[in-house]
Image 1 (cartoon, rainbow, N blue to C red):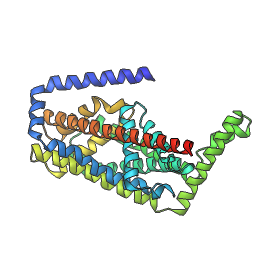
Image 2: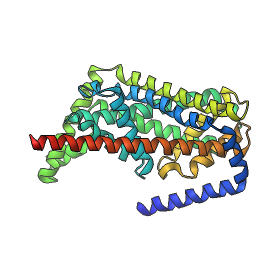
Image 3: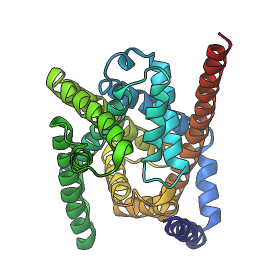
Image 4: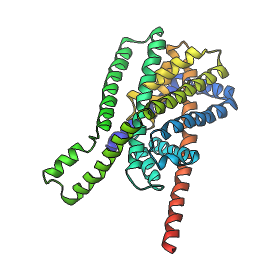
Length: 330
């Protein structure tokens, strides 16, 4: 797996260098200079997007974690996202970090269920929003038949996977295989302990869906508001350099998100993110240099917020160390 990640990173870096070479470093630098301080505003706008996503995540949490301050939840979410960005774990490493940081405030299955439901809420809202948006907008864009087929097949597969994940959660079946192994005397005490823990998670998941049926739709609603803000951010970019419309910004965002969904396992999306934005801008009638500039602006935004998230992660770990030291002194 490590070899796969190394190869994909090298291929991505090669693709990025090829794009810059073909489109021209001068054209890229010219557009970046035209952005000026607007690039800083573009980067900071992602913080507003994250605010909406944090509100959505709160609806996925059970008490007492739901009572955590907004700023702490915002920091935990940002820390997890930064780990997802800097490590080749297909967006799983950051979810583990979120769970561990939540556990600093409360030991129990609620931390795990908050992460599991939160991941489902975001994935489901993203898929529904992109499918609806693509239905309304992308049919007006002249896309290659192969691209349209890949988008359709990808949506079906992703939809089936997410629907299955939802059913498993609602019926408390995450630990089915582990419990079956324990009943057949496989794994010994270690597996039995794991089965007990995952059973608690299953029971907490079932209670969430039974007692709070409205919270998942509410979480999805706030996530979709965050996605609308992302489209507004793309529109802002277009207004800085062109007279692009909101329709064009939405089309670029939907196409870019589809590429993200189909290439999520590639570390950092290196090269692929920039290349997919070049394709998206070309499909909407813009020049290639503008698409590459947008991809680079997204890359700078991700680096900035990943750095902020890592700093928050270090600060939260330092708080944990201080708390442990206080307990040992007492």
